[in-house]
Image (cartoon, rainbow, N blue to C red; front, side):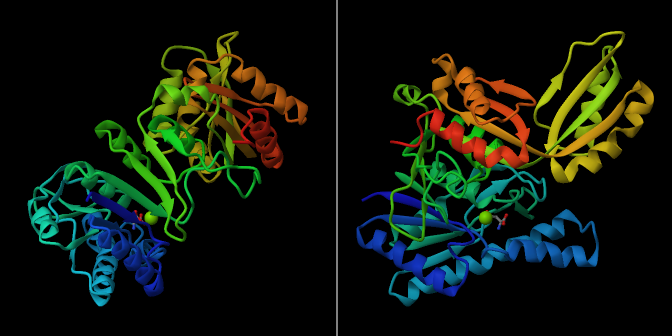
Length: 404
Ligand code: ASP
Ligand code: MG
C-alpha cells in the first residue's frame, strides 16, 4: 500500500464526463489498496473566463478579489470530483487550500507556499477517504485566500506530495509525457522515459512547457520524483527526477522550438558602464521577459545590443526603451518572425562537439543562424520562423533522437 498523489489538469476534468472518468481511475488505484490524495485544477477555460469577466468590469481589478474569484474554479472541480467518487461508492472528501492547511505568504495572485499543516488531511486519509484537494490556492497568515500563479495546481501537487511524504506523485495532463520534440512538428519524436529536473526546466524555458516551472523548481529543491502522464490513456509517462550518471550518456535529450519570438536590435548605444543596466532595468520594470542577449564588441564609443523577446511584447519593449535611448543615444529596430531552436541535455556537460553537430545540421538544411547563446546544458540559436519546423526535424535526426 502506498500513498499516492495525483494531479489532474484542466482538460482532464474538463466536463462532467471527464470527471467521471477521472473518478474511475482514482477508484482503481484505491481498489488496489492505495491511499489517494488528488489535486485538481479548474475545468479548462474556467480560469480564463473568470479573469475575462473581471476585466470586463475594470482593467485592473484588485488582486485580493481576483484570488477570491479564481479560487472558485478549483472549488467547483473538487466538489464535483468528490461527488463523482461518492456516486461510485468511494468515500471522498473535498478540501479547499485553506482547509488543507496550505499556508502561503500574502502575495495575492502569485503567492508562495510557506508550509503545509496536513494534520487534518492525514486524519481523513487514514480513516479511508480519498482526499480531493483544490490546486492553485492557499491561505495567507491573515486568513486571506491566495493563489499560486497560473498553472499553480502543479505546485500544489508537488508541495503536498512532499509534505505528506507520498510514495508516488503523478501529474495527469492531456499529453503522454515529455517528448524529444513536439510530435506535431517532428513525426519521429519519442516519449522520454526519464528526464532530470534541470532538463525539464530548460526545455520549458525553450518553448516546450508541460508544467508550471515553479513546480519543477520546487520538486528539484525538495527532491520530489514525479511522473507526467496522460489521463486519456494508461500509457506510462515520463519520470522526472534528480540527475543520475546514466542520464549523461544521452547528449541531447530534446529539441525545443519557440516560434513566437522577435528580435530587438539597439544600434549605436553608448559603450560605457551602466548602459546595459539601464536598458534591462527599463525592460524589467515593464515586466518584459528577455531571452537571448548578445552585445558585440564596441568601437568608437558605441556598441550594438540585441535581444529576443516574445513577439507580442515587442511594442511594449520599444516604448519602455524610448526614455533610455533618449539619454544614451542609439536607435532601436525590431524584426519579427523569429524562432528560437534549442537543444537540451545534461550529457552536454561531458560531451564535446554538440555545437558543431547542431550548426552542421542547420547548415546542411540551408538554415541561417542569427544569434547563438549557450548554458551548461542548452544551446539556443535564433533562426527564421519559416525554417523552424524543418530545422527541428533535421536537428532531431542529427542527434540520433529519431530512434530509441
Ligand atoms: N486554474 C489555474 C490556471 O488555469 C491553475 C491550474 O490550472 O493549474 O492557471
Ligand atoms: Mg492548468
